[in-house]
Image (cartoon, rainbow, N blue to C red):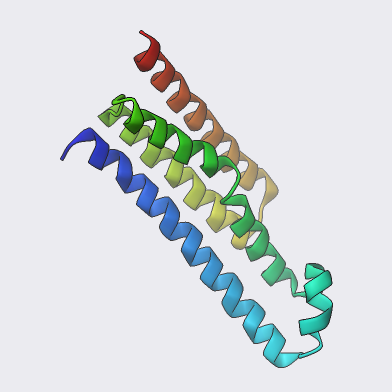
Length: 139
């Protein structure tokens, strides 16, 4: 396996997580709309009309378009500049693991301290990825 291939594994896992969360949000919202058709009009303007669980999942789904954007960018830039490495691949895997933990906590117990710890750990790994990339690219 080449470093570029190894770097794509965490990308595919992150994309799978995002698609999975979308499917869960869609299924819950669909179920709630079937149970209360008035949601079709009210939720179109105010998504807080859905249940707390649906909102929790939707919030977590939306968070997949925040920090992971910097992850996708670092992978793309590393590949475009031929700076890919097994170290970046391992850090990418660690970042995605923190995202899975964050999602599990956010959509489960929703313990804010645990959620923050996994979020902060992910950002630290992401910052390290950018540092490694910068060091490799400029030196």
